[in-house]
Image 1: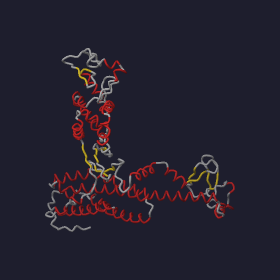
Image 2: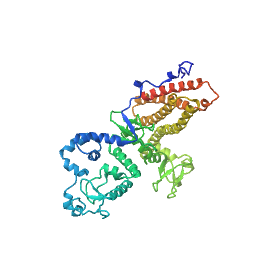
Image 3: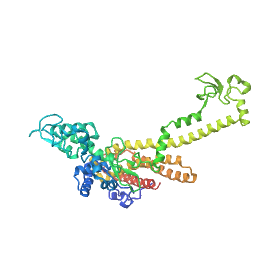
Image 4: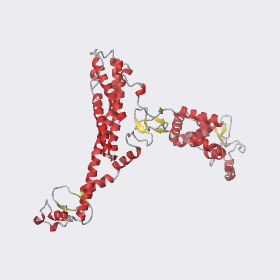
Length: 484
């Protein structure tokens, strides 16, 4: 495809722009963030204003209801006290009756001693207690919370140090007592709890990515992460358009399950007539010897080999088999039909799997080009002084190739399960169109960029010609992908 732009490339560089705002890819709303604390506390503040509770209580309530405001409003007001005890923000007064020893650390019973270290409270080592009233020295609070944080993400649900107490340690206590390094760890668990509990938030499934995506269910389930990768929010696997989640899961299970081994065995082996173990024929001769039981038989008719010879057709033919076949022997006919059906299914599966696998490899290769292209972009900016905005097209192009490879990969899964021949014909036409454009875009983006880094070349027309060509193919390929 030839660029239609003017030869005055440097002056016309802005003409190679990206699609207008209204032409941008329509996806459901999503948001990436690497600090969930602010988002959590903003949502908690709305609850604080609604219920008139403290921030600590708001955090505990939101976690209990997994950040689902509808469920919270439906259930909270019906029995606040019971739910408060259950989630650990209200003290269970019946506890003292059941377990009298828990009363020893209560503020009104305490004799001025910490019930963890048995040290005396002092001006230097003051006591502290949550609303349950169980008092402990501040040093033990610090040690206790530090230990909990280093045990793992369950730290956010830590209970009062008093054995059997139902109260959950509030967020403010961690903020108050933890040292800098422990606080970093706690905040990691604090943010993880939000992500794990919230059905509208998912971690990016790609290796090495620490971002998560928040998604509001507006129909489209594919979301894009800040790391540049996209995935299906519903099932958490890589984007698999045009397949639905069920087809994708079935395909993955098919690829990894024993079912394909069984199909291969059915298509390529026969059972030994004596011990019934499967045997593969790896040479042209019909004389078979079972390695398991040493039984010798004919591959075709499965009769004893001792009953075979020149009169039955020799080593490479079997008159007995042909005779049984011509008479319509039920067993021979049934075995052949089953074997042929298995062979046909295996051939069909391998056709789609090989193409799925080829695009998977091409996608991985395109991903490996990302850091290379980013490095070249940096060099073009530093050495040739191109503004970053003029070089974005390279990053966008390689990302489009990755998206196309991802879609093409799953078009073969979709095609494998598509039974309607008319629909399949149309689908294959669209698939071929996308493949053709993606291959050319992939070829363009792989062209070496080193010639454009030569400081001895002042003329930039070749670079802008390359840019125009790449953007044209980017736009065409993207349009085909979105319409397929």
